[in-house]
Image (cartoon, rainbow, N blue to C red; front, side):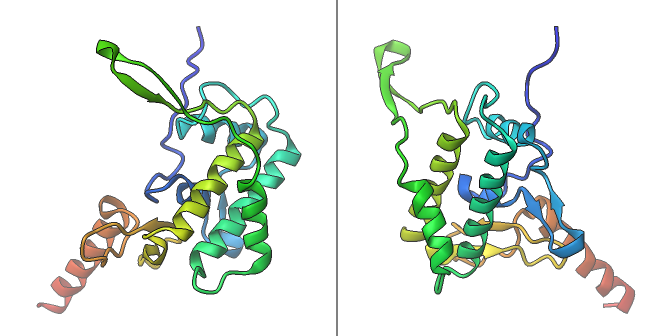
Length: 193
């Protein structure tokens, strides 16, 4: 029997919000950019790795992939320029956010206690709507001024800084932060400090 689990490792999950993590499916700029959503199947894999769907999205088509790229870029630009966003980007985000979407349900869980059941997404449009709504919530919420780009010179990932002092610099201390600290240590060691 084939293993149908989706490995989340190829995708980056440092953003702190689903909409920010979605922007991480394109890293770098210009010719060095790395596209992780190259095919409609990749979009379906991302949805499953993000725990937003249990099965492949049946309508993940080249057109849906193009729509996902368009929303992703609008979110990325808006997160970077939240103080003065582009009206066309806001329109793209709002159009997706305004679509209907199945809501969460309440069900009986262990010991008959009520538990929240998030809707499982079955269509690409539902996925993009959920991502757009998360982006709207972030951009209009208390952490809108805490969206940052990683300070590592070779990283373009965004993240939401929810640290108490609000001075987080890296998308991940384990990745970019550790590399930066090691580079600083080596530079001091070389200089004899």
